[in-house]
Image (tube, rainbow, N blue to C red; front, top):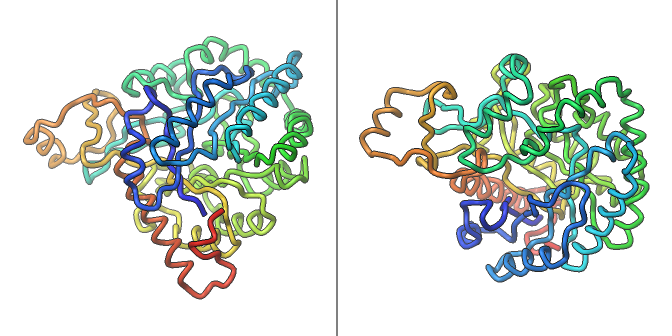
Length: 396
């Protein structure tokens, strides 16, 4: 297992590589070039500079998240072949600079959704929350405007202004699409790129839909064990694999995450993992909790045990974290959840700065704590009684 950390790149992330390197057990970062539009080939000089910067900080960069899939590919529209060719060019350039895994998604139009980016919890921390009824009463444009107001001037991937200009066109294009047509379009893409992934030895790792329930009438397909199986069966190559995201799959109540890890992990189809916890409020609504099992609804020990038991040698990163220790104090009215009186008085007493620029869900402190909680669970499994679990010295 390699422990990694999401980093959005210089000028896109308030957290420095120097800070990330100080997290015990951290081997590298998972990064991207956010400004390259989907469908365009990534310039090699940009890739080279990005990799050199990370390596100069004493970290590895072997995973890219994400090389986004253009909507023409998902829709099977005219122009998809050109976009696929550009995707293959990007893969070749990434491989030349040591990239071994690409995390991507097939979600129609919107990569993710939350109703609240800063939902205050009774302990004074805040987190991202999903409330289905809240989102149902908004248009995509209204939700995008809400994100723009709350995100401290950082553009939210999947909700960029350029994408939102075309949102109604895309919604109309997907309106009457049958599930089988969508899967056929996915297969067309996979059959085109997977031979190159095999040649370049790049593991392709699809990310599940987040959240695993329909929004704005858009189809949601990669949301369960059965759907993952169907996707992986579209192309049986082991290079066609999965980013196992506990938060996305776990947001479907009743999902057996350890069982999925054992099934797909034993087949060596899990190449990358996002591990986070969440707490259900009802059948559909949840907020993202601390990683520690009792804080949420998922059993992190059983999840890490399943990875360990299957001999997982891929990449794991702590996923979204809360904002803690006043890393971000959000004082905007109308977007707050529960706030304790003590939290308000503490803010006033210590004169905490308002509007510190952070990326919602991607603060430093809680993810660093989560990383070492996961690493501690991994060490406990390694030193326990599970023979299949690889030793700490067997990292690739």
